[in-house]
Length: 148
Ligand SMILES: [Cu+2]
Image (tube, rainbow, N blue to C red; front, side, top):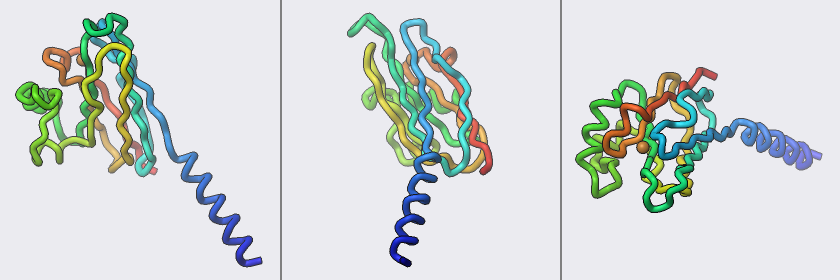
């Protein structure tokens, strides 16, 4: 009997966690804009950001990515660092820069999809942008993490 109870408890816990997970869908094409610029999630939630480059010109499509910053960081200053990191897809790989990011979706060509999975941290505003040269000005948004 006790075993059965433990098993049911396990099932309930597992389904509660599944409900906690959220998928955010974002896309961009050759117009150089994101399809959405604002998202809301809850602190502690498991988040999967699915980013698709819907450009239809194949190899000639503009390349885009998503760089997600931790609260307290500004896009302009970080974008400058990204510009200097062409060889790593315009995402800096030094320790200091890594600590300022939640993560990123790599640079994608037309028709490609990438994901970034993370657990929503402290409540606050998490800015994201495309670090492809000249794009951040037009391609930026915010994920707001709300308290539980
Ligand atoms: Cu872009």
